[in-house]
Length: 133
Image 1 (cartoon, rainbow, N blue to C red):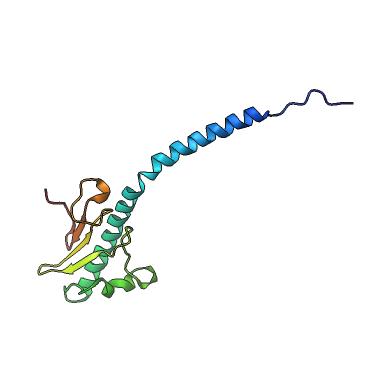
Image 2 (cartoon, rainbow, N blue to C red; image 1 turned 180 degrees about the vertical axis):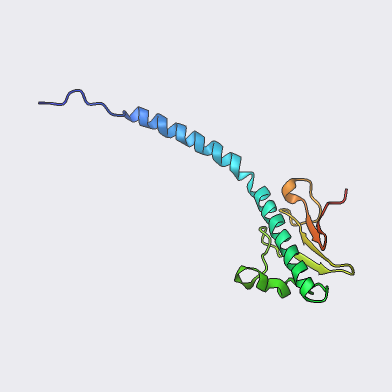
């Protein structure tokens, strides 16, 4: 008995499906690739909030003084190291007369910026500081 009524996909049908999948993948990649700097910016902001908390806790344990550098609070983080910002530059920390200032310069790694990913993120002893206009 011969099988004459076999059904399957033709080469053209398979190529059309592959083309549709390629178009969908291209659209998805374009939509997500532009969001990477913004995601890194949000990650930096969240990490800085954790660093700000660690500095505050350290201060409470040390007569309300603030650390001279972030190395003094490193043991409060996994691996014993203070996080570095997602843009691969260390967070800028300085002890001030009233407390401290913790800064991330954003994706452009320069002060200021107009795009969200380029905006500076600044924390002090009170929390996140809003950018000056």
